[in-house]
Length: 188
Image (cartoon, rainbow, N blue to C red):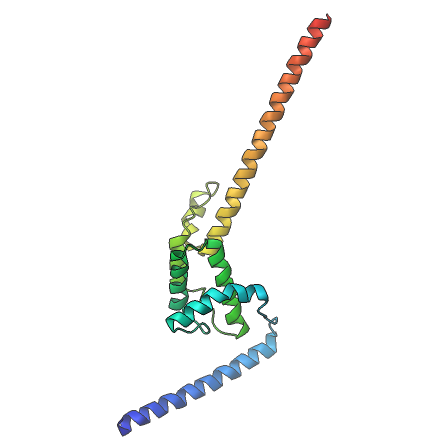
């Protein structure tokens, strides 16, 4: 190693130490001002994180602070393993919680992760939306699209069930009226 490269390395280390010091001071000041709610990893979050932690260990990548590309690659791996979108979103929520716990940037809410999620969540805009609303559908995060799509399907299923019940009640009413008419004619 040359003297110039050693000096450059020492300067880089010195700069990194100053940046870490400055960021720690900024973080402490904002936490003192706003006092964010305490974040804890409960047993459910730990359970949800387990596949991500294991995957990170197998691939020699950081789990915290995870890079967005790492999270995106994990999501693709989960899709390949047959994980459901609901399980993937739950795990991503736990990854977000882990990063919040350590006051780190959220690697999940990034373009690369949204792009990967957009490939697995292919929800069309609800039919009840106007053309203008449907044009903005692409901008929604995939988790929101999945939730809206799920709720839309639940609403449509409930509506169809209620329509069938109303039709059955009408049929029963018509049959009851017809049989009452027949009974009335028999009496007369």
